[in-house]
Length: 404
Image (cartoon, rainbow, N blue to C red):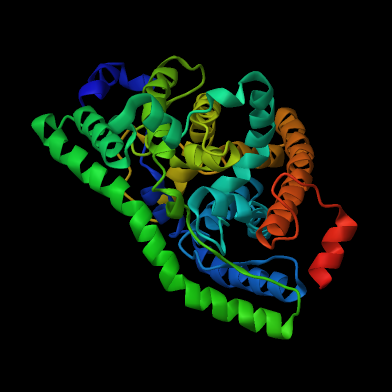
């Protein structure tokens, strides 16, 4: 808490809502009276889309059903109609599965693990991040890319996972007021960043027979089809670029929350802002320069959306008998797809700015979808040995190769 002490001296009225982090927030959403219905909805949609060939992703990440519950709850609260809330959640589920299909080869390139997808909602933010990354491609020279490999070249041993983990963990420990105990936090973080890639590979090795059996079943009954296993984001957690970007975003988040007009949420429980940095890691192909720029752009958006949704989270806690501190509201700073959720919820309130934002998001989704589809087709063709990495493959060739 050492770095937070100056913030806590600010008059209490400056921050009337405290960020409780993603786990308590989603846990609170599970207490919504219609929450249990989301399980059959998500599973049913996934099965139907697989049978109809509309997706290649079998989503086994059931914990993140809580994110669809949260979306349905927000929309239901604003409209007073749970059916509308579930309808919006259904759109989110479909978008997550389709997005997983279109980033699966990017995930393989970044992790080295084939046959997996990422149907987590955080990756829908790449609809927004993609054009920003494209613009940054024109501004920032490719030769200046900073990723884990570049870090190792520039700073030597300090770019190693275990050393980076120790440094990051030590800094976080100091921020938490641990004193000399921060050294142990550093050691633990270093172990985590060393073991995460190893555990990911072991986990995927264990999943390989399941994936192969599922693909054999699909190919036998649906020739020419493939299927990937949809997993949670921690498969990416062994990449130090994510954690370095997170730690460098923390001071900016704290500073912006203090000076930002209209914000009354103090980032706290979710300062380790994974939802932006992990999504940006995929969208920016691990370039930390672009990841940090996107993270800094998103900080005020996360503050305003958390402020906007705090009363609704607070009311849910009161309705379900949760503990709410006197004079303090509950909030979730750093929620997944905060920008999209804000646009949808405010559009339901007939906010002209939000309606325009929704139209813009749909336009950006189209701009994002088709290049992503082409990238996936190209990556698949390279993987199958149909073309070389720097070659082009037209759609007629692709269809002919796929049929064969």
